[in-house]
Length: 166
Image (cartoon, rainbow, N blue to C red):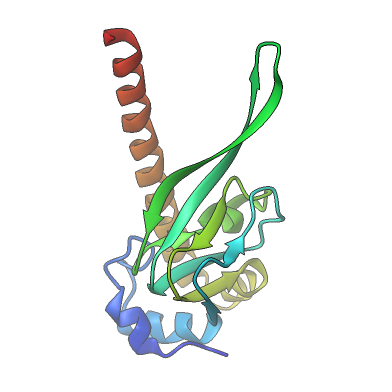
């Protein structure tokens, strides 16, 4: 089921949508499927095939990365780390639209969530029908990914600072 275009107008400040006109939002709303997730359910799991992204319309999700740690002499141990909390207007799973690789983290609903799902097949249809809009969306994806890489770099700097100043 397509989502109401009003839902996109409420989150149009998202870097994914900032270059879009009202007509663009109408076209995008027809491509997006509404997806609902109850609290504590998973939108997707780390390692699963990546074939879609989600724009969070309401609610909040956690991005969780599972790490397999190996301690000397004690074998492997699994540890989950929350990387980010993501709320309305933000996207998760956007790398799947770009590279189709397995998911790099899991996403779990922290509360009831309504999201707009865009899969690769629908994006490919948009690309064929409206290349200019597809490029605007792709630039929005790159802005989102670029912002996330910058945040990861800042976090890495903080970790390095703490390691070397203790």
